[in-house]
Length: 534
Image (cartoon, rainbow, N blue to C red; front, top):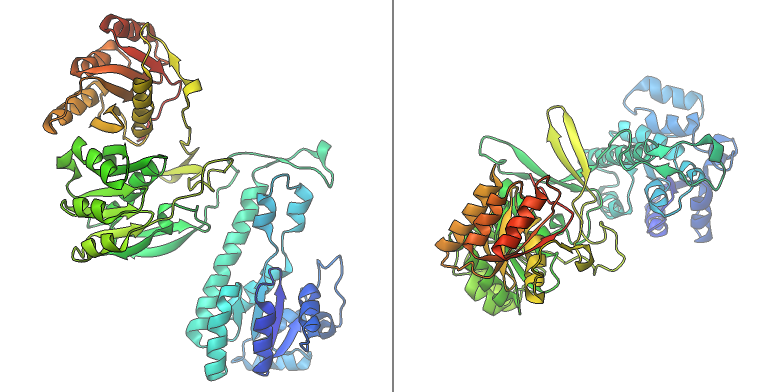
């Protein structure tokens, strides 16, 4: 048996080659891989010796040869193929170990030049991988170090690879080629070509949206059904998921997550991880129905639950603090579909042990904010929405409001306490479906109006819900995700008890609304940014 090893990432390759050699497998290799194996005392035959043709063009041409591809592509069950190999002195290659030049890592670096990007486009590697993967019935193709263990286990057990493993390796190989080519296409179709600047040090300008989008996702699991029982569904994740994102969750207990569970859980998790203080978010049908910050997990949950106990029934709960026994004991009194936290104490797990249908998800929070990219902070850089035969892409709504962004437009100035409530309400409104109206006070939501065609109706619904929960809206702060087109929406929230309002501004009737706020004696702050969420 012959194995050809030619890898860019040399993680584990020496140990793997040693194991192959111990099994009596002949080792063929190229360039740096061959040198590494030889330096570690392994007998290795260079491909140039096999092809009787030297590596050339700085290593660009070394495996593009009939003695390599013939050995990979020849079908062992076709006599004419085997006769052709014999006639031309070509040996079969039974194992191919190849990982590709690090194109993705190269172009991800700040200041990557066009020359570096082009040089890291692998040619011979993908060609060999495709040849081996096409001939999967006879050749095992290994494209990742995490496949070494399974391959060695079968070789040691039976001296050859099973059809099942060879086919799985082939599928993984074609997937890797698709990922690689997609990354190249994304990069090159985003480059703004400027021939006047071409040089070895030329760092091209890249468009935010490439000429072709090649999103790569890998399947996590099939789901029981989709949004409704007559729809089929599956969960996919990014090839390299952001740290602290929902798809990195570890499910500790409970039945399988449904399509709607996952969608609602993502809404809750994205909202809760944006708070620095201990926070709890309760989501029902994609909208936060209760959000609060507190001293600890129990305090935050207790306040969030007060907003809308009716909607919280059967909801999704997310915490940004470890769930301890005290919080678990309180939460376990309500019916909850999914409960998420960065960690769970042994006492908390014991409390939920008998509630076998409750899905517990453990998700590590992303790193602290300072200087991190969106990806490093666990956030998508892009959002996508399918339309008929098309795709809408946009940058994600990752805007964060700070005090310096705010503009007080009324005679009355908000107090420091009111300003804190306004910022809290604004943070929540970002995750409420439009039209969104959110009443808050003391670090908790007091009433939420969501998803109405009229902003006026959202304001009324938020007031009604607060009344149903037995909460008073006197002295509350209100956030509106978009401007008030008329004064009537403002009048509704002030009539309900609001003393300060935050909204983007930008309406042709801003002055009318500002005058109304002054007339009613409330403070109004413009954010300059809206947060539509459809």
